[in-house]
Amino acid sequence: MKSRNILPLTALLTGLLSLSSCEKAQPFLDKMGEALNRETPEEKARKKVDIEEKLAEAIPPPPEPVKMEPVINKEARVSVLGYHDFTEGVSKNDMIINVDTFREQMQAIKDSEIPVITMQQFLDWRAGKKDIPPEALMITIDDGWKATHNLAMGVMKEYEFPFTVFLYKNYVGVGGKSMTYEEIREIARNGGTICSHSVSHGFMGKKGGRSQANYEEWLKTELVDSHVFLEENFGDTKAVVKTFAYPYGSLNDDVLRLTEKYGYAAGFTVNGEKVTWETPMMKLGRYIVHGKKIANFEPALNFGTGRVTSSGRKLITESRGEDGEKLPPLITLYPPKESTIKSRMPKIEADLSKLAGVQADSISMRVAGFGRVPHIYDPATGMVTFQVPQRIRLEECGVQLSFRHAGNRNSETIGWSFKIDKVAEYFNPENSEPRKPRELSAVEPKEEAPVAADDN
Ligand SMILES: [Zn+2]
Image (cartoon, rainbow, N blue to C red; front, side, top):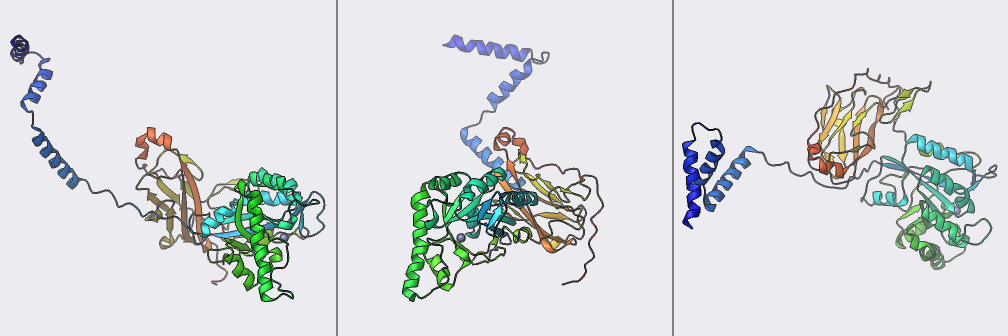
């Protein structure tokens, strides 16, 4: 046993002797120091607490987490388009539209960049669960004509637009120009939502010669049986959603009351008007697009918010001048619209420097998962910025920015979203560091503020 201790002691002495002359002695000295300074666990613990207290004093506490709330834009507006039947030939009446005209309209929707949302997205927005873009469209097709499957569905697939079909029970799978059950199922598999349009397609708002009790009994059948029928036959497709379109838009207070009573989430009329946060759920307007004298399509797409400025340039999307030249968007965004970034803590930026007369106190920014956020606006540079303070948990993050400027009398709301590549972020944690300020692009002259004709 003793002999084992002799060797280290010898080494120690040799080491000490060679100290002054040999550089190799340093690691040896370090070891010695360690041995002499060995602390008891209690001492170590005390020291640790001490260091932690000092650190806590030196580093400010992390910012309070921003209150999480669903980002619901109550200023958003929706245009609901209503179609009926389609033809490859010439439209003979207003309820039948030529399919090429229909395709042109879908192309116009695509060009307008107004997003087309699903029935469920719309319901979720009104229920305060999920947000929708500030301007959105919904496409509905009534009755269940075979051409809905044979002509319209292909166009909707081409444009990848979701749509809703309102079917009435007595016109499902009855031959002639009605759709078969299988055709309806195919619609459900191709972006179609299936909703009720009554049992008999009668004028529900007309009591006729019925007693009040008989009338209400009849309305109950129209409302309840039609939905039960859809659930029984197509419920397994998960495409049935409990909303109702009143045949001919015919309704009265009894109809409204009973539609709600029998559990419908929404009722659609044929009054061409925008649906807002305030629109009664049982009385939602739709723009019925005519086939012969093309009406209602243009008004549906016109949200009148001046997305296009006086020069013809759009705020956040590219546009084309009269001679076909490309006009870049007026507002530069970071992270760019529909981009994928690698950081979960980006600095969100909107460059408003090309807009004249931006009102600083009118600016408000909302970020998905954070709600309304405390942005910073620098009037000198025109930059609106917000440094995301915590890692974004969403895969896709939406931003909404509202503001007033001299180019538009109404307040402007722009919305965009970006995606976060979480895997890339995980492997590159330094990506989460706040970005350094981006170099501003070459300064362009400001947009001339239009001369207001009147102040109304
Ligand atoms: Zn109908």
